[in-house]
Every structure is written in structure tokens, then in C-alpha cells.
Image 1 (cartoon, rainbow, N blue to C red):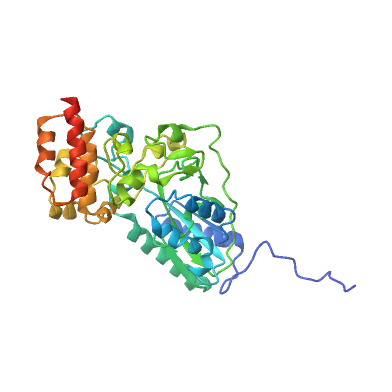
Image 2 (cartoon, helix red, strand yellow):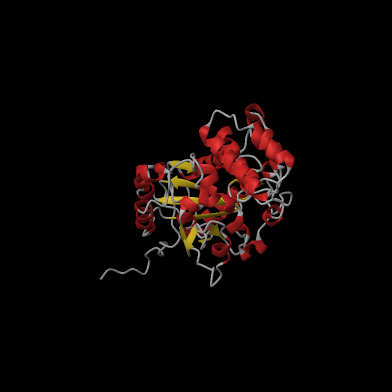
Length: 370
């Protein structure tokens, strides 16, 4: 047997990468520094295998719980096979960015003011997609400059199992409301990913800390969280007001309340939010006309005013007609007044049969209250 007394020490636990002689610990520190400079609140790395979650996704789609989001089914194979999106991907770099601001009206306060519109917190400031993707691209460029490799950044811009990867990368766990949450940050944050061809040091997956809590399940107005960790999108207010383009099913309209874009109920009730941190990003500061707005003011907007007031926000993607549809439902749930009924009647001649149907429903609610 050959003498190994002078053999070099084993360094498998401290891998080296192209263009560097950094250890795993040094890589971790550098990535932390870069991500912090770019405004990310956390960063982690995992392998690209979605594991059993790919099977769960297929079962969910087969049950039709994705509703009219046919693109989810059309691109399901890209979620389960990340190599189809980015050839030879070996690592997934995951980041979080906090978006909670002290200036935003709390969801529970909006629930007590039915004459006002409830817009999800993430949408009352600047749209995060482009801003985050640009910063992720800068992070990818720094990694490529230092170590080579090919990298591709995503922020809701491709079929990526972002919550699965974020949990594997240690950024938090998927809660019973099916959103990611963390003990040190609650659940008010955005996620982004970089697919990389480098074999970067992996982080330890996050563990679940929901315990016996079921507050997010019981608070859901439409019963969309059908069981712990199971969501029927067809019942979800966020789906109904954003993704669903047709008539909102009558059985959910009363439960929608004053939500006109998305819903924060299951997020806001989570006890871990007592540790949530306020964002340092000025762009996420609520725009004055979108934070706790009067429903009648929103309903009075012309299409040009809608485009002007929603420029640069995530709200614009639903379009003016869907915006009016959502507000008509909210007005149907608001306290009866002459001005409210008059505003609904003034739009009864709208060319859209779908909108007229929602307006008539809203007027019928007030006739019952008369």
C-alpha cells in the first residue's frame, strides 16, 4: 500500500470554483455581501431538483385547481425539468426582498372600512418585477466575472418552482397558506432566482414551524385553503381579482368584500409577522392614491386615469375592464348610499356585458338593503 503521509489534506468540504481559490465559506460570505449591497434581505443556494413537489404540482393541475391559468399546465414540464429552461443548471441561487412598509394601511384596518378599496400591499408601490430582475442580473454578472459559468435570472418571469427552491435554500418554509414564511421575517417579501451552471455550495433546507396554528386557513373568506398546505386557486380572492378574466362566480362575491386587487388576509394573520422587517426600498412606498382609496373615486376613473394612476405598478396588468369589475363587486358590498347607487347606475350602459352583469349584481345588493 503506498505511503500517504505526504498526501494533501482532503478539501472536499471546501470546494474550489473556476477562476477562484475560494472555499465554500468564502463563497457564502461574498454572496452575502453582494446580495446585501443590492438590497436583498437574504440569499441561499440549493440544487435544481424539485423532488416530490413536481409530482404534487401535476396532481394539483390534474384536479383543475389552477382554474383558468392554463399557462401553468402548458409549462408544467419546465417547472419540473429546470434544465429545459437553462441547460446544465447545477445550482439555484434564491433571494428574498422585503416589501413591508410602515406607511401602508394595515389589512385589518381596511377590512373595517368597506367604503375603501383593499389593494394588496405588494401592489401599492412600484412593480417589483423589473427592479428585482435588474438587480439579480447584476448579481449574476458579478458571479460570472469572478467564477465564469452561465446564469439566468428570474422574478416571476418564467415557470420556476420558486417557493420550493427557496425552502431548499433555507430562506423559509412553505406555510399552511402555501406561501413562504420565515421565523425572522414573517412573509412580507418577494422571491427571485438565478439558475447557474456552477456547482455552488448548498445551504441547509428550512424546517417547518407552523405547528398547530391554523389561523391562515380559518381567516380565508372563500375557503380557498382547503387543507393545510393545499390551495384551490379557483376560490382564492387573489386569483379571482387578478388572474381570472371572466365573470366572478356569484357565490364568492360577498366574501370578496372590499378587495379590488389581490388579498392579504392569510398573510396578515400569520403570527410570525411580529418579526417582519420594514423594507428599505423607497420604491415600495405606497402611492397616496392606492393606499386605502375610496371605492367611489376608483370607480370614477376614466381609462386614461386608470393608466396614469397605475403606471409602474403591478395593478396595470389586469386592465381597465377587470379593474371596474372588481370595484363593482366591492361597491356591492359597501354601505348603501345615494352616491354609490348613482355611480353604479351611471355605468349600466357600459358596452361590456360582463361589467354590466356585475353592476346589476351590486345594485341588487343595495335594493335588498333599501
